[in-house]
Length: 154
View 1: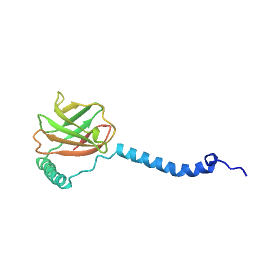
View 2: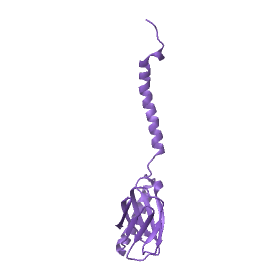
View 3: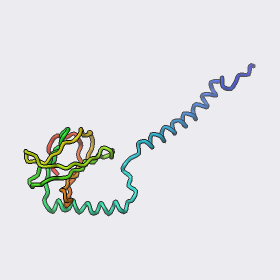
View 4: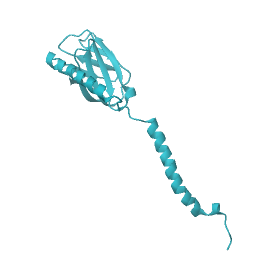
């Protein structure tokens, strides 16, 4: 019987390939998870909890004042209309999973009795829209799926 070198035997390579593929898969998983970590983890839960309680009073203030708004988000424009008159409103657009897509706007009155602002193309998906006055005395919010070109009541 002829003695073959170990590296010429295909069974040896099969036995080496199985654990090696597991090692390569593990390294790839670690690299992928490090590059795409979620943005939803908060470091200081106590401070965040206190801030949430303060923010809830702002939502209650909007209810007490009877603030009603309608919001429309077009491809390149956000519009807000209300029976009340405002000199300007702040809007926060918060994407449900991608924090780098979040942005803030200031809406100003236009010629058609709404407050509006231009935006870059908005990414489709689930968004939280928060509207507040310039003095931050109240807030209203709603979670919507965009694109949506109809008026949404807040």
